[in-house]
Image 1 (cartoon, rainbow, N blue to C red):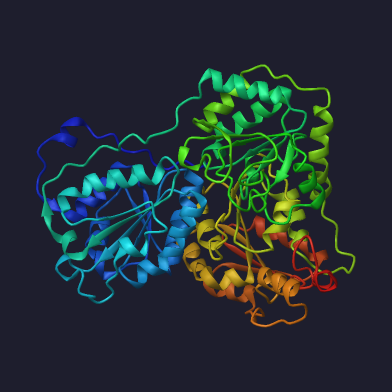
Image 2 (cartoon, rainbow, N blue to C red; image 1 turned 180 degrees about the vertical axis):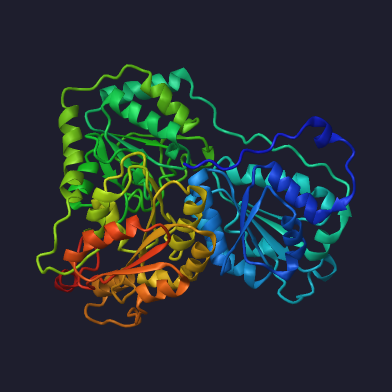
Length: 570
């Protein structure tokens, strides 16, 4: 991960002395800086103009101006994914808030810490159905962990501190803070509050670790399912690898967490995304013990609640998580409420014992992954995104950041790109199209010394692709590869499976994406054949600036695991 600014340590005399009266907007900006915020993403709005004015005088916080509120929200999500700290977005009331709501939903689904600040009508107009007024508590009730309306500017330090705690623990997620326009202009006497400690799961008990180690030693065919935000940091990755090697454990990674474990390691058992190879699914089902660490065991990861089976798994399930609310929620499990990383470190320190047959079990789970990883050109010679993924596997830097938007095209990256354990994967567990471009921009701004490579579909490209202007404006050197097959491909795939040959409502007529990119001031390139792929990929990676590559993929190759012809024959 790339480090954000550390929370500022406030000298006690400054933090607790009798404060001088100041504008609420200035107090808010000081509170954000005290919590380590060094960058916010926004679309300006008149309902929080006072905050923009306060930011004008702030040397601590950079303002990234976006082209759509969904882009601002997605950039904040992307920033949080690469730092592990709350991403911050500001949007205006009404339409601004509803446009940003997609990012709030993604943050909830993906367990990403996000604090969204939303403007509101003046306090005296609340409840009158005023211009662009929304009841945010009702609007965000099913998406946000909390919604706070700041009635009194004196409470700004308290509410900011609380929002940062809520966004980060025990399971990270989104918090919405509502800022009435008139409140921001008031003067108030309030001291900046030091960042509060975030409640974390503690270390596991020695008894729990010993019990799990004994279960693993006695199992013929154990399977580790690892995921969740905490395990993805450097310390968590090291602990996962150490525990796997100490106890000879196969590791399967939860949806969009493929970067947590070296994909070329013999203990790697695959990525639990959509449409895993059938032979892999069959072998997973033979596991006689499942150890789930850090993951909430959501639908895609569990292959539709079958791995493990819900509500009563076919094999013993040990679930290690620091949030007890997600243990026993969908599965009968032996729960260990503890910091997953601390648990893995403790487990790695226990001498491992494995039955003689464990080596064969490791090979059985690793074999389908290895077989699927090698890309072969389609027999018909048509272009698919595998050609790009195979080239990137050779050319991407070992610590590159890979960003995927939602869609079938990302499957080629998951199958044919071997994540090193140092790579960082930024994807959307919640499956929202449009995350890719904004998140890749946020990643490039946060980690300017690392390659940022972005897989995007032609559908998502024109949802938030206008943020390419933001990339050019702020110098985000993102390398974007657009799978241009003239279709909402994932929906077309399901349409072909359910209503064979009856295509309706899924076709797209696209611009020339290379020329489109050039119009923004980015470099535009194109790949029209397999023979061109490696050369153009090299060209894109070498360019010192944002690049868009229009990859003219064949619609026939609708997904890495099937074709339209195969769907119609099924």
